[in-house]
Structures are given as C-alpha cells and as structure tokens.
Image (cartoon, rainbow, N blue to C red):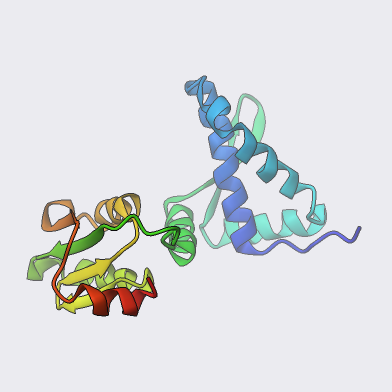
Length: 184
C-alpha cells in the first residue's frame, strides 16, 4: 500500500483527535463516547508517509498554526488559536443538513442582528444559504429539515445567540410551493 502525502487539513483534523485523547485524562467518560470515532481517526495516522507528515507539521508550526510543547517529558503538538480557527473553517465547509424523511414540520430562522455586527450577520446569512435554506425575506429563512444543532452552532460561533430565533411550525402559507421547491 502506497502511503499518502498529508495535507494541512488532514494534519489539523488529526491533531483535533489527539486533543480528544488528551482530554480523556480529564474526562474519564469521554473515551467511551468517542471510542469508535477515535479508533477510526487514529488509523488515519498510519496512512501517511511519516517523513512527509513530520515535514507538514514543521511547516504548520512555522506558519503559527501548530505549537510544540513538552509535557511529561514528551514533545506534544497542539493547535494554536490560528489552527483552531482553520479547523472551524474546515468544519464549516463540511456543514450540511441531514435531509431524511420529512416530519411535516417547517423550520423558520428569523434574525435581527445589529448593524455593529454586520460581518457576523453577513457570514451567518452566507451559511444559511450554503445549508440550502430558502430566503423568504432579508432575515427570514425556511427549511423542512431539522437544523437545531447546526443553527445553535452558528449562533454560538458568530456570537449572535440573542439575535436569532429558530421556530418549528406545523403549517405555513403557500405550503404547496415550498414543498415543490424542496422536492417534498
């Protein structure tokens, strides 16, 4: 089997996993919850050419994305603040809504973000569109799919919790056209 060359994204996401491993010392139940995920991710380290992996970590260290520390006599690589921001960016790129069977309810995302948070409002709006919510008005979006966790994550990420409301409703005017739009 030919070993792969690691990309920055691979290394950063794998360092997040090692952070989970380190956190398991502080939270003993964490490994039980994450055990299947951790095993899968740990196997990924073995798929990379070790020499190239070390070179990629050193490159990320030079750019300030990864920090090297010594803990208990061992060298440990951790994500810096800049690295954590990159990981969040990668996760945002992968963020989608699960489009399973429709439960007959609609979700309305309504927000009124102050002008002082224009950048957050623009980023929030872009991600709602990326998640394929239908824009009904400038700050009102509709989807038939469950999105509570995704919206909560975005509200927290952009620090707009108090300005965003998620409503779950059983009916809406012009429902037939919305069903057609979403292919229901």
